Amino acid sequence: MPCMIQIGKLTIDAPFFQAGLAGYSDTAMRMVARKHGCPMCVTEAMLDQFLINGGKGLKAAEIDPEDHLITGQLMGSHPDDIAQGCKILVGLGYDIIDVNLACPVKKIRKKARGGHLLQEPDAAIDILKSARQAVGDDVPCTVKLRRATDETPESAANFYRIFQAVIDLGYAGAVVHGRSVDQKYNGPSRWSFLKELVDQYGQTPNFIIGGSGDIWEAQDIFRMIQQTGVDIVSVARGCIGNPWIFQQARALMANPNADSAQLAPTLDQQRHVLLEHFGLSQKLHGERMASMMMRKFGIKFSAHHPTPESVRLAFIAVKSLNDWQNVLENFYVSTSSLPVSS
Ligand SMILES: Cc1cc2nc3c(=O)[nH]c(=O)nc-3n(C[C@H](O)[C@H](O)[C@H](O)COP(=O)(O)O)c2cc1C
Image: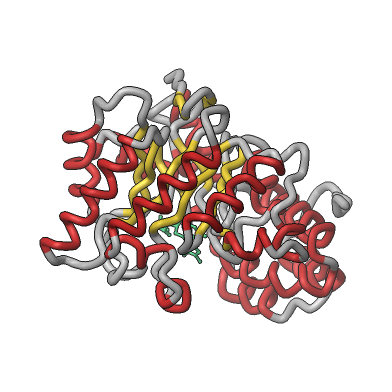
């Protein structure tokens, strides 16, 4: 199934991408995803003020030359700051700029950012306008939203007002998470809402609609497209510790009847990725920090192992590269010895 998705002037060759995932989707996770067939990755939401203030926040936003196509996601509460933040991201070479109107985290909402803005449509539209003007026409702008703040009719009306403004302002697309802000990550993502949105706005020229929520395995990507008609699917929690989901999705694009059991990663493939991901993380964060960060990935990776619980416990105890390698020696017996990439 050949597939070309147009995002502004950019084209990607598969109808899925790796979502922004705060605390996870750094350069290391993105590079591993790309090697497994992911055509586009989103950064975690970056605060405009962190970029403007320079220092660590700005340093963390720098992109590896091989880390493309990449969407830089920005979050803020003041139109001037968001404009400055957008210009910084464009200057750093981001391919797409995405405005976050979705984050449900309390401390973000309290500062009138992220998902909070869905209940303040005027403020949200000011932010969107400012971002779009700052970015200009050479780099596509997109937005990430949730379907509503809560279940009230006012909240639904706010969503549609903001969504219409996104289109009118010339955004190249929107990704909608089918949970409300109040829902956080509880309960199902409402795919029927995504379908209604596509029914209403799916024919808008030069505008794509993406869907997010409850993508756990490769088949879910195509199920969401089939059930809702979205152009593109955001893969989020389903790709933490599971870059193979992208390879499997590509296999399903080539053959929709491919046997998913045959697409499961072998122990050797798991070992290879575990070493590679740690190496990339170490290069980025140093050994101590990488050891801490990789524990939470290890917990997710362990789900692919025949004895997940003992592997999970072993990963939780990791404090160094040596510990990580010991887990691999003990649980991921390999026929080849693979060096850690650095
Ligand atoms: C730990 C975590 C961090 C997240 N960080 C971001 C983020 O920085 N930007 C963003 O747009 N979405 C973020 N999300 C939301 C996901 O991209 C996605 O919309 C959500 O998890 C629903 O998809 P899923 O049910 O398939 O996981 C985050 C979700 C989780 C669980």
